[in-house]
Length: 162
Image (cartoon, rainbow, N blue to C red; front, side, top):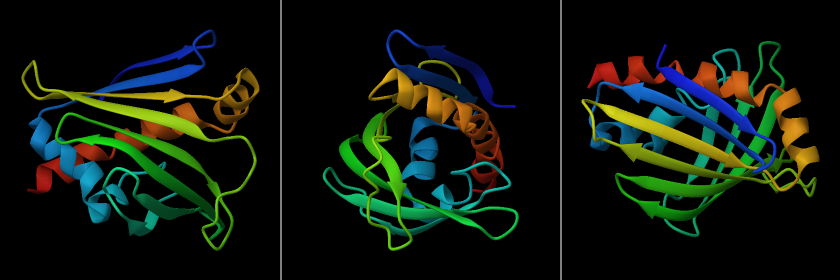
């Protein structure tokens, strides 16, 4: 498994997950910048993602849905805040309705992704910042931590293909 650490900090309202990959930061960056690669790992293995848009620029948006084992769909959106290829990106992540329109449910999470190539391979750190303790508790109880760990476990196979 590629995940080396998972840490919840209720005071800071963050969930941080770290994963190591044997590939370079440039190669790992592609699993974020290429929507066809992204949809192969974003979401737990039993809830694969389909990205219907992916405007990978600051201020750009992505829309996606994950399909569950019984065919149910969970829609989401991202808004890219910063992009510093191949080192870091920041985006806001929220739920959407079936048309892709953001839901006004207070569960928008800010994700900060950092890729560090200071050792052999790449250390990816994903820090999710929640707007409130209640939002953090709700997302964690929905399985966000386990889902991210499972999702990141799919990245090695994608990196091994190229």
